[in-house]
Figure 1 (cartoon, rainbow over the protein chains, first blue to last red):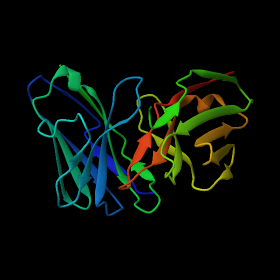
Figure 2 (figure 1 turned 180 degrees about the vertical axis):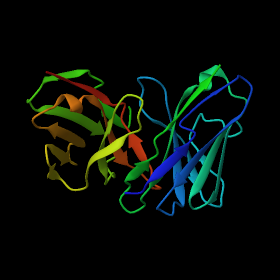
Figure 3 (figure 1 turned 135 degrees about the vertical axis):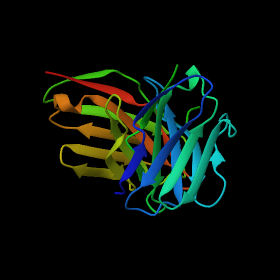
Figure 4 (figure 1 turned 180 degrees about the horizontal axis):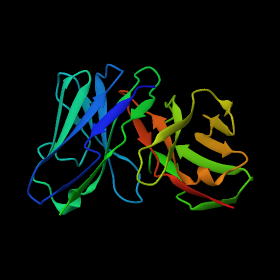
Length: 115
Length: 110
């Protein structure tokens, strides 16, 4: 499967600031990437589908102006959490998907803590 | 009704026994089914995938799919303490995205 990296692996920021998380597909040309959020003891929640060269598709209830997604190349998608608040503290995971098999290749995740 | 349902557990199984994890899904048109294992603080890793009715075996793991009943399961034979984790059932949807269940916490007791 594809190898996906994320940076940073963890980040602490102050309330009101913005944080950018990078997701890189190291050996796979990812036209589509997915961003998930996971709160403690809960399952993965799909936030948005990132499409290379076009706008991201957000899931219902996810604020697109707060969670900015950019997918400018086949190997990089970024998620920017703008004006972060403590309730945005979560584990953010990206993945790429194989269109033929639906198999997902996950990055290692980014732990965001907003103080 | 949730699209993918799992019992949250925890499911406690003695070491060496068979652990049985179950999942139901609502979309009859689904064609791809996955089991992921997730350790605390880590991202999910793929254990098994299955596309056809019946059983699929890989080492100690067996995935079972019954599309008529909209049911997919995962059996873990000879359970080891290292199998203790949360197991996520996932079903392929449109546009290459998959829908995850809420996960079942499995605990293997020595």
